[in-house]
Length: 351
Image 1 (cartoon, rainbow, N blue to C red):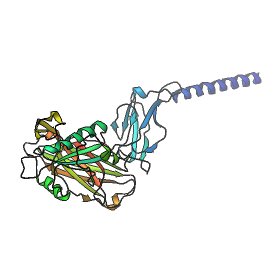
Image 2 (tube, rainbow, N blue to C red):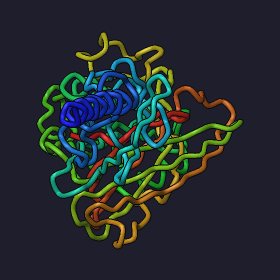
Image 3 (cartoon, one colour):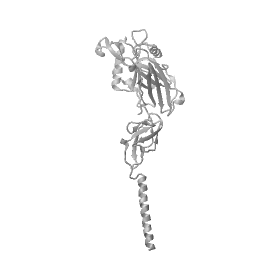
Image 4 (tube, helix red, strand yellow):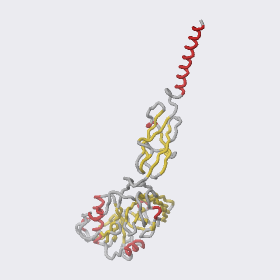
């Protein structure tokens, strides 16, 4: 009898343990969604400018990425892909039906492997009175047809002529480059694009265009009333010495009659009526030759920041004003250049 009771007690004890274990497993969520997790595919550390792709799963291993909201540094992102524009560590979490989640951290790092888009600078010393300057204007059009990787500045003058856009900054640049004949054209400040009748050969500017740059530039700006507050940031993925930053204000799409002595261009007439002029120089935001960047900030993984302020004169079209920022070496050669409309923001152009 005792043996039978002992056997029954043992069976009951085992059954209680089994049912107790099942209840515990259910409580831990093996059959119920109780929490979610977020992960970064391909690792939690990537080069700056490379995208992170996030996946969200519940504790039953169901992929719920498309039904979740993902936050980076507490800011919601669109979809599940995030590309950092600043180096550093980012906190990532997800939201789904108010279920708990543990945030993760991802890190954007910089090394010599990071590169940026390279752009060349085309400066055209021109005038609406100058009938031969249409060669330079046609070169602008043909260069645009071959590449978008350049920034153009139309430097009008000289003062005292009928050109309506000659100004003190234009005169400074004319003196700097010793311009005595118009047009005069320069690529990256120090390469002369000789004047001749050839307006289709783009070999001079394109020879200065590199596959990449180790200097990245971005520009952010806002407008309050007639005041522009702007900030340019410059990122370095190589070590540099004796760099300068120069910045200018230009106005695009200015309309004025243009003299023309080249019969093969623009219909051959002596005057091009209502010609649309591009990126006309309005003013400088720094010295025309640039201001030094501290050498401690021009090394790998460093970011330099420079603020500007500009009061818009009456008569300027705010919608067509742009900021142009360039980085020059110790010889005054432009290493990279960027433009952006005022009141807008852009990011580094990573390759």
